[in-house]
Image (cartoon, rainbow, N blue to C red):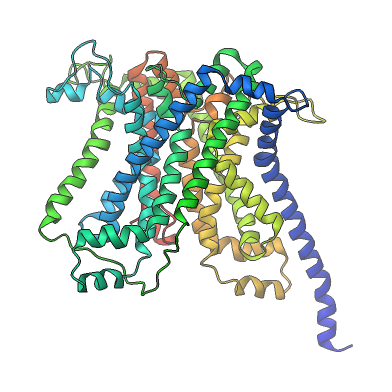
Length: 576
């Protein structure tokens, strides 16, 4: 036997072991994704269609045909559509300014523009409510206070539409900015040579070619608006303006688990509206071929004498939509009673000390949320690196199914995931007699299912920049799969995976849509705390908790930005 043949003979068992290890790892990933994402959703569908084991179309008609459900469905579609229009206008204008013009201070402006998207929606709603209430300390300082006893202007359909539109504008901004950056500069130069004005270039050439990004942003804004529990609950419930998501919450809150069968039907309706919006936007965006060829040199539109007025307007918009409500939130957190004027006599840190040290429920919510979000970020980072390996270099039908299951769980409203988790984990686990319903474990399961796709997207961006030759060389040298992942692949994609972990941590720490249904006396999280405190009349304490949540988000964003030079471009959404 030659030396080469002997070497080949020695290598074969190692390769067989490596393939076997990959198979075991892929199987474990399949159990993880299917068990946490696909199986609960399948249980939800089965309960909605056949709660007693057999399909019952008449029951579907009874639940969906009630006046209350019809009104909530119409209201949901109205606020989603109108708020999406607001988001489209705001997000497209912002993307155009940042991606195409010579506006100064873009990096800081983009960071501030994206910040509201990182803030929990219930905290944003609370800030706006306190900013425009009749006893608002900010409007009082400006002499613009509403008359005493006046109805709050945001407790209405228009208020919900406005806040949802502002909150989701950064989603449109991100997709439209990406689309505009792909357009070559030759388009503008050719139009300018033909004598077209900049406004005509923008309306007839640039924006039509960016239509795919615009419709993608519209789909994201529509889906986010449908599933945004924080804003709809904080504004819609006091206004007696029911939507599907608040109807599910109120029914389960008042009736309990006995209403799960009916709520499964409403959750399916909510999921159908979400998927329908995504499908329609995708179809509209792909109706015409808008691919273009050209250099990678970016477009640039000179503002000329309009630059200073445009910059002033852009910063004034941020002051009105970010600084004003957050200032009201901070002011409210620093006084003893809601509506008091902030002076040296009324200034106090009592609300913060109470939130951090005196209120056991809030402290428990902080600690539980920190534990859950840290665990979620760490587990999903490991899963994303392993799954990203197969998605990038060993794609198969099974791997694509796992990817689709993760994306579906992320796209659906969190309250749908919450109902699905209750249905799936309400009974004791097989062979154990142990039920995780009412414990932190069911919340962890919801977080892992909901944020897998978010973690995976950043990790896949890291894989896209890795040369596979190093991994293949390690394989030829006889390194097993786990060793290659530990020594070669893991270190190469770890910066992108770490960025994904930070984004998952921020999202899960402030999560409310699933946890609002899953929290119990034994398992409290931070996200729903603001809603519970506001409903209980503790507005100043709720403001303090909201400010602490904003401070955590801001600190994480600044930390990630400081480490951005180690990350692939585009991983952090607030990077210009």
